Length: 116
Length: 113
Image (cartoon, rainbow over the protein chains, first blue to last red):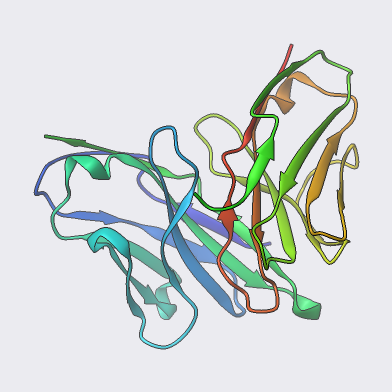
């Protein structure tokens, strides 16, 4: 069965610091990769996704992620965080199963707190 | 707003009771997935419905069951509630045909006492 590991459960940064959140998955087949964000009191929303093509993908609010297939990784980055980036961040993988279906798997999440 | 609505937003049930949670999917989406999110954890996949049929299931017992209706809305039913079922239940809609990302609702906070 596929799994998703997020290495950092809690991250505390000051504004303008750089951010990198690690995500590794285990699945040998075709995958689609996502990062979701959940701001306090709000629903999960998509930050960015990778389906194919350029492994460096850019999302909303200045976030980007790089898919490294050899390392089964999809790390999230932002060069300069803002206080408003305080949220929970979830890495997710859609593993393509037989019959055209896919099974979504989420990581445990990383809680990011940015101090002003 | 995502266009995915869940009801109710909160409810409290007693151990052993049964509960039904509802989800209206976003217009144009034919796939609904249900997740359980315990405090401090990521969403755990319960099952997925595609065109009214179960299309994948996570590691949840049979007392977790579901339905999808012709308009693609969905229900999650949980029988014989246990204390550990207390969690946020999330519904997400997507289009399997185009393998889009999932759009999530606000969730239903279930407390079992």
